[in-house]
Image (cartoon, rainbow, N blue to C red):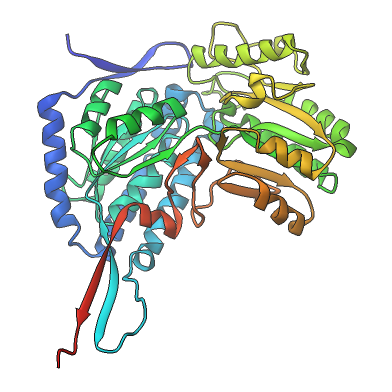
Length: 464
């Protein structure tokens, strides 16, 4: 019997989709086609690449009415929010298409008498994108569109929980008339994925996922001398200063903690609040959290869907129970959320206080609808606690003082510093992390540097 990968829906536990795992000949053919296609694709103009990629974006958006409920079935996001991911997909794709000409232009180091010199950005070759399920269109587009705009061919392997997303990308590029082989997808298990990387079939890996999985990527790539872009875990903090707009901070941080059921790499997982506003902040967060509607994601009234699978919910429940046993206070009665049930993917949101950094819920990624809140005496204590982590993707500061935010931001070990916003990715800025969050960069002009290699030209014009 052929091996398969399955998408088990968190809505009802049914098998929503399954596909056969690709094997030797099919894998070899896909990468051979990619390598052959890339030789022609790299010679195409940036304008032509942009035309085809833009047409693919149009084709993807035309599938919106099918994609939104499909996402709900695959990974549980409520349909009322499903269109938001496609809007973000479009924003990122169109921005990277727009800036490609400037970002990939030759670099002029300046005049030197008797010489002509420049640096050209060349495509790396075949890019292998390994995408996660939590934002399956947003995370994949971060590398797919800029990689192709830079002249690379792309092979996509999507997470089993969002199998159909890979097919949507394929349909969009096929509808756009992209040359055959420039974009392809494969259904793979972990073993086959590692074999592809270790086997020298690719020139670059772009991976988004957990820290342990990132280590596996590096192990597979050992000795291949290829770049491995890694966007891994986060335990993203927020700091609420006493000079903040408190109502604005409460509203946005609750959304930042619980949107997508907390399943966001840059979602807010821990909050530090100045003593002066701590009680009011906690009260506001608790009241707003109680307003969520946990339910079937296909219902338009649902604002909090299930986690991607029951095991994910059980992991978060375990963190909460461990924290409460150690002295934390849980402010939300899960029994007030009718769909919450131990053993299911449906889980009520939770707000914890009286927490500390001896508790896993404050130090280990939760990836679920729980947030811990600690009071602090001021900036220095907040900075120390924000930096007390082995990951660093984003940090959000809530204050009316931009100079203070810049000063604090300089001291925080993170890839992105927000002021008065959170859980957002601006495609004009570099998306990157520090510590165990990974290496490399996507989006912005800087992201194009990661998907190309520099080639220097040094011509002596005057030989007399």
